[in-house]
Amino acid sequence: MSLLRSVKLFLIFCLFFSLSLGLCFSVFGTIGLAREMYLRSEGRVIQATITNQRINDHGNYEVQYQFAIRGVIYSASDEIGGHNLWEVIPTEATGSLDVLYLPSDPWINRPVMPKENPLAGFITGFVLGAILLIFIGERITTNYRRYWAARQSNDSGAIKRLNEPLVTVRKNKRKEHQ
Image 1 (cartoon, rainbow, N blue to C red):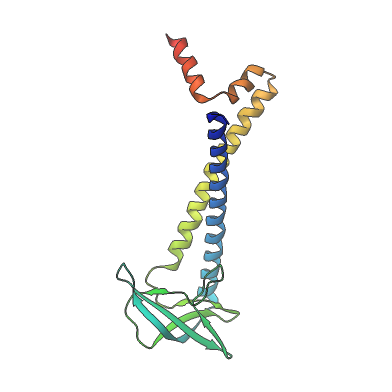
Image 2: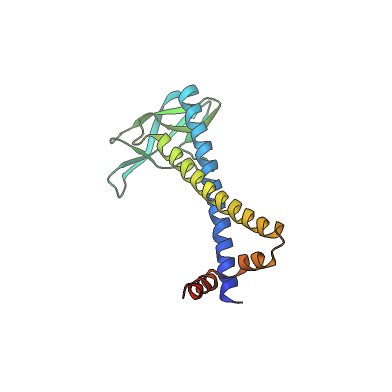
């Protein structure tokens, strides 16, 4: 396999990887934003029992907690189904903790007083995903338009130049200037 073909395959891989990453960030950011907004508008407060606590490497207090509703035990969870997760809180807590939960789905919950604004991470993820998608979309449409413009003009030389390596084009330009 030639070096040029390897580079093209690597760039195609990077394009699809970036597209996938952008979609994931955008989707999870949107889901997180929707969950947080729904939690703020429909959430109820309950006392949860702290089952474990620690101080993480950054000096923040983290807790694991559980609460029961109608005999079912719930804990901190995330968008992809993780349960009994560690939650960062602003101060040390002992015994119990106020938790905000959705009555329709108690797995959607968080401490009433989290260390950081829950919306910040979701907005960051959404914006980062959107930027990746816009960048990749711009690259795809630009190359698509160039390819079809060359094809529509029936200029075989233009189509051939699209497939030439960039280094060759630059060498030809240097020769023209000399």
